[in-house]
Amino acid sequence: SDDKNPIHQYKASGTFDVWLRAYNSFGCADSISQKVEARIVTGVVVPNAFTPNNDGKNDVLYVKAFGVSKMTFRIYNRLGQKIFESSDIESGWDGKYKGVLQPTDAYAYTLNIEFFDGKKQRLKGDITLIR
Image (spheres, rainbow, N blue to C red):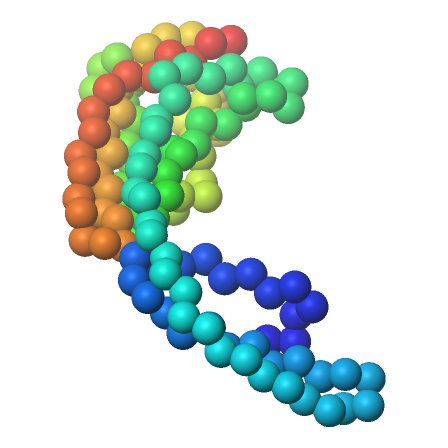
């Protein structure tokens, strides 16, 4: 890349070759390569409460995870009706269903997650929506 301070996040553990080429103001180049060992520690946390009240704090419930290759996150209301589903780690629940604010209550969730190292995990629990 042409980035001044490039960053790369590895998705799997292992030893990798890193190569850097730099140019000075006269167009002269130099390069270096180095082996780098990356150890990925996978993990996942689902918060047990959130407050979607538009105060800019804790308004959206996100799965907090690292090293995720795939996931399916579902939230159900007290009647067992699925009111939220996402397969995108960057998408969270804003406390609405079909644009309608949901009431303060406990909501069940299921989370099926697969990490880049091939490990799979299934979590179930509840989330309290507080208004």
